[in-house]
Length: 521
Image 1 (cartoon, one colour):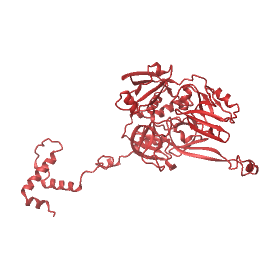
Image 2 (cartoon, helix red, strand yellow):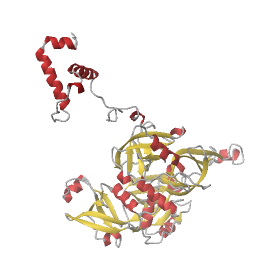
Image 3 (cartoon, rainbow, N blue to C red):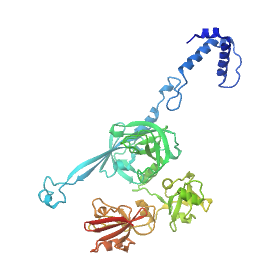
Image 4 (cartoon, one colour):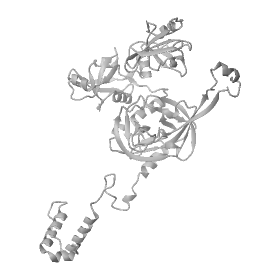
């Protein structure tokens, strides 16, 4: 049963005194310092204070919004938005349109009977061509028209165009593609002066920072989404050879690839490149290539290089598992274990030995091989790397000047005769430079490596892949490309047996006409 304030005071004098004490305590609890007495004319009556207190209690606690901040106290504060950030960054973000012409194979091609009646000269036998197009986003990074996007957006493209935020369109030339980082650099043909985005130091990005993703999802036009940085240095994503990403929950969808991830100052902190999704739409797990890696690719393109030159340290590494950490006396797994050292390389000259553990580079913690590769790439050729190494239960600091991977032997790059067992494959003599070019990190000794395998070639039919090392053919060990050419040019009556090494494991395939078998050795 409710009663008014006046009735409450009349019924129980003691309750009235208690309420006064409670109110006095609540007023002073914010500072815990006794307040001086105030004149009666300067204060509200006790009844007013009490009523106001009851009203506040009835309204419930002062709730906060989803961001964990109190609601704006004034109308002006309620007008706060990301608009200034978008106005700063959006003019530098463009839509990228890529197109390529592909040959559509006739269903009768290769069949002797149907080619007789539906040959190339017939309407049914003529190969048809169709245009494949892809849509993505890009970012203008220099005022003279250098645009950065994802490699998978413009891969194999014959024609590339961009559209600015104001609707104007420009044709572009592809001046550099880096498959490892999934980045490509375009140059606007017409020239002119464009709005370039400022590039931030991505090492300053922290988990919880607010970021905006700007791009062209699903081709609907430039779109801005907001979120926070969910993780930095995210690896084991499996997107491409480069595996060191900024993770964000800002909505990223198909078409956002190549778009900008910007901070609250409108600076580029990453290039949006992939999402984790089972449905194809955004699930709040998106990945961006850090801006520091972006700067490396831009520098390579601006300096006129046709490929990104990555540094070589002269050593191979492997993950430190819990078992390895225990054997080394480490409290927890971390860092990378030196597996081998190239004779005469920078690592050997600096005193690094197999069994050492690298736990830091230039004051950055190294957790795995992906972090190591990223740090080396962002330091670059000619840079100095300060490595923190655990060697024989002792901690030491090692300084290494990073160099370009050497080509210790002539590569002798050769395309195999189409009619041979490795027909169509491009082979080269293995060296540190060639191994790095292919992305081989598990082995740096001599041998012959597969540089490329065209589709529909005999090598592809025999499941030969880029990066495979040719160990032996018909029992004969292979040392150089000329050995492969000499052996495969001769006819083999008993068929072919080829031993390949892939990812540290040896595979054998046997081919004799229509007979084919593959197994692991």
